[in-house]
Length: 205
Ligand code: PCA
Image (cartoon, rainbow, N blue to C red; front, side, top):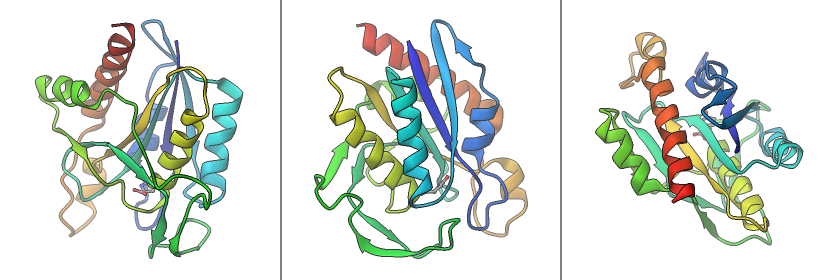
């Protein structure tokens, strides 16, 4: 089985992005799952373009797209991607966008095809704080999530795919006066292995 896992580069006032650090610290193989890794630009054109290139090139059987949500204390398994770009924090191209659809011809929303309930249970059982989230916001993570699920909807086979927001790393939390409940890299790595195991077991059953 081939699983594409993506993180994002740093953006805004975050000098590092835990999703990038995590992806770069994962092995290339987990059991019989081959991990294809990619880091996406926080750029409203290049981010989705790079994701689509990775999808077309590797034709993965499952996809995990990851990003930072610095104000969240738990691993957030996103349930829904919406057809909206609406952000006042500039992307890394310096662009802000208000009230634009991602795809003027696309549906209003797509649901994640990850086994969300099983994932939350597995993570909680392992002592890792996790929750299902009903909003991936309307910035780059949501845009990449929507682009991913649009691609999934066009495939002939069923693909487990979705977006997961991660808390900040302790190194980031230490450098700010803002409330930023962190999670360590070791916990994030442990969580990712559990997530991959749960996806493969759910697909097999
Ligand atoms: N988080 C941002 C974009 C990149 C990232 O890691 C978001 O939540 O949209």
